[in-house]
Length: 115
Length: 113
Image 1 (cartoon, each protein chain N blue to C red):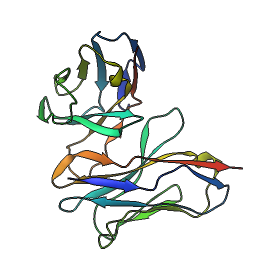
Image 2 (image 1 turned 30 degrees about the horizontal axis):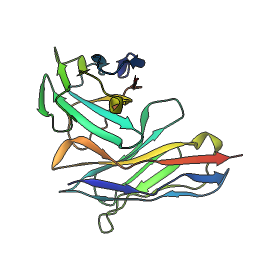
Image 3 (image 1 turned 180 degrees about the vertical axis):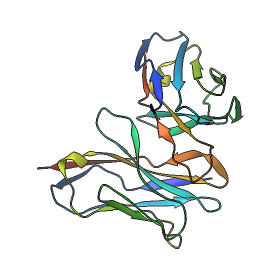
Image 4 (image 1 turned 90 degrees about the vertical axis):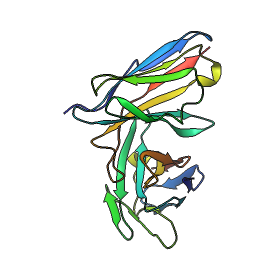
């Protein structure tokens, strides 16, 4: 079936604006993950969903970041009052159950640029 | 906490050369280990994985063996091609945090004809 999809693929915004990034996981995958890829920090884990609940939000860098998942499927990552340091590629991944042995399948990412 | 250290790049090789990218890790419990690859302009793709000690993951001519005694998972390929040019990431998932991947910083490989 189709892989993980993300939208938009690119987003340019002005500092202080809010942005929403969308992730559509592989159908039937219960676990969903958000990561951020930036030049300075490499690949960082942000948040994990098992179904619609997020057991671990510890990777979110500040309270300006939030995420939700509805219907056990689509997830939205929201960044409020964006700052220039939020510029990065935001990656979404999904896996069937979330167990350690499973492969996480990544989407193409959303490239965010905050001016 | 969990961490992955991989060889700093960039690595530049000629076609048909032998490739090794070193990766060592620190983790709680018995982690699963992964190599992901990111080709230019594309997303992260799983290259290979190993879920227990002494397992060997292999794909597309690449291999890596899970060495618990040395906490390593080095990536090797006997003869690289220009099409292997990409960024390679070593990663783990440990029993202590069995949902998230912890990544190394990535190694840029360029293969020249």
